[in-house]
View 1 (cartoon, rainbow, N blue to C red):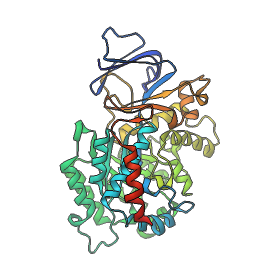
View 2 (cartoon, helix red, strand yellow):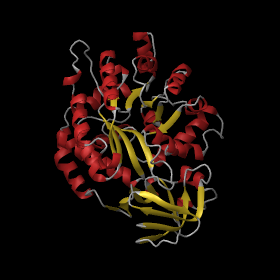
View 3 (tube, rainbow, N blue to C red):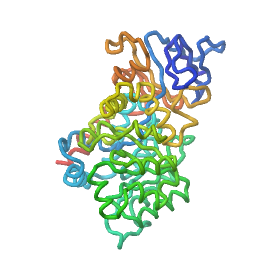
View 4 (tube, rainbow, N blue to C red):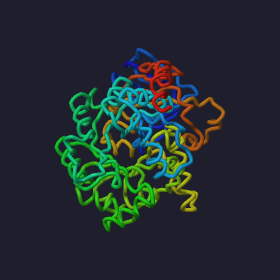
Length: 433
């Protein structure tokens, strides 16, 4: 046994034993090899005393734009349309491939520091993002959301999304035992057209890729689509086959009941982004109704420029509180369900449900450890409730992915934070000035 956590509190996310006290968890290579309230007979190379500590599955961020750390605070206090077209798209046009890698590195550093072990990311220059995520040790489903505003001149094989995806497919897809995955992606209904969607669907089918799409994020987007096509974005993507493969639909703020039923039929996932949706005044997704109808709901931060944080603990709490508020039911979306959205449900969205999202023997050791001795986590009457409503990413003191400790007590083992800060200041920010 390589590592043993002893006499520790464990949130397993297993229905049969959600919380274990004074427990033991062992790791060998990349896997969890032991989990019990009884001490193992096998010795370990390293033992960590679990006094005043808590283990839980790493959080899974199913919608982000990692390099947008570069634009943290760049265009605040705007609605989505103005934010995107007047500020973000022009700023992104100034960024080069090197800048994307630096921004992605900063994003991964923030995720590891705050307890995220797996991320679904959509951006451009994705070979740089794949390189960063591979070297950093985090799990990642990476895609370049296809955009095309001219259907007449559209050529999929000349589109940057396709060309970059081929590069990632060749050099990074399924690297390190599947830790890095390429997903196919359509940016959104309002930034592309049907011929582009069909090309992406064919590409995904050819290589057996998952799909990522922005869906019905704002009322304007949703209503304009109906006015233009006589159908909702969900109906259009359903008809073109974009939901026939495992699809993660980011936002889903304005989907109708009928849209939800279509997504359920296709085993799709709605990636809820509560903080970003609130900041951009896009609305509040009806998570309770989605779950009632049987839709898998996961959680994401969106990009830092529209959040402005990658702390998934903030998202978990906000996810629960918003549903209580809009339903006027304090029992809506209780803490265990909110945490399931950020772990188990996220694993399903990524196609990783048999490897992560729970702490169980033979699952990957994607584990975070929190310090329970801090004031904001005391007293602790119910562990899961305390974590959801009182914890923050700052309480994370260790992040492990596939058995490798990537962050521990302020130390990064795979990232050079000072180098990232230097490159950000001297090579990236001048591009925006």
